[in-house]
Length: 174
Length: 261
Image: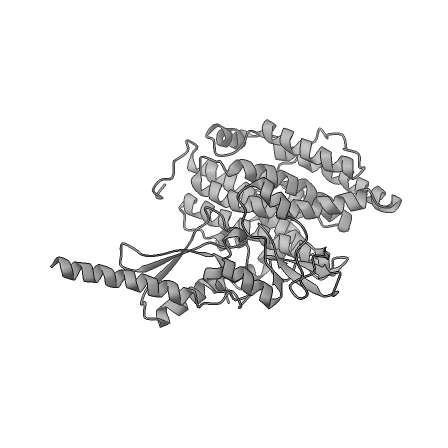
């Protein structure tokens, strides 16, 4: 009896791990090199009291048009992985921060040609020290300049490398 | 309140909905105005900047309108509130609906409202209304970025050529009278402040004023004298400009009710 209950519980836990693995394979619609897990927008994956799978999602920007697409992609990926009913809910607090982009995600961004935000730091003073110009994702030069505070999506700004002269996107640090 | 763990502030529902609509409508109307710049800004970077700011503002409005609709409990969705309310039901600050004018006019309007929204959202982030506090905490980060853009341009235009300085000073004189409404509390504001939902108007004004003065001084611009005249957009009495803006904003839903894609 207990053994059976334990097995059922273990199976439900295993399903959650599988759901997380599925989401780690769902690309961001605007920056497909990042998965939703890399981006840090998946805040929770759990079983609801009604037996449905519940996914908590933190939008990056209040008005980001990709949020609706992300929500639909999450449901589609989980349904096709065998989870019949999936409920996605917004998690506004605490608000999403670029600190939540995974280390792996930062490496993928740079390899893709987008300068990642600086790695999270422990204090405001440490942040001020890292808030210099971004490194060029192509030639690694630190001699770069800001072209535009805003870029092709709400989460990016536009910079230019003074060494290789190439413009590049930078993930905004918020 | 149905949400577990949310403290219920002691202001009645109608007052709370009215207060939410004031904040939501100011973001929505300002976002719609900025959207008019798309394809017309002086350079691609400014086009992107204004459009991205518009997107954030409309996103904030969606979150706030959805909440206002739920709280009101009459089944009105964010879309119903945005697209089907008449002009006197819109409660945005009159400053937000002022026409774009030239780029300097837009930057001045944006700067005055960015500085206002930053102070407002920072305070709403500790509101006794937990849901409003969440929305505001998200908006603070975006607004800080907006202010960096508008304040940066105000300094460049103000501390620029004689031509740019003269024009942007004239914009400031023209738009300044509309700022009074932002800090002139009525019964709704007082009730909301007493319930700990929103900030005290005088404290908000002092913080805004100090921030604005710092930037104006860097921009070598003169702070205009305060005007005795008051506007009442937040009570639904608007300047002549809002009706035209709403006819653009609402055209599709009015012409093809329920249309979606």
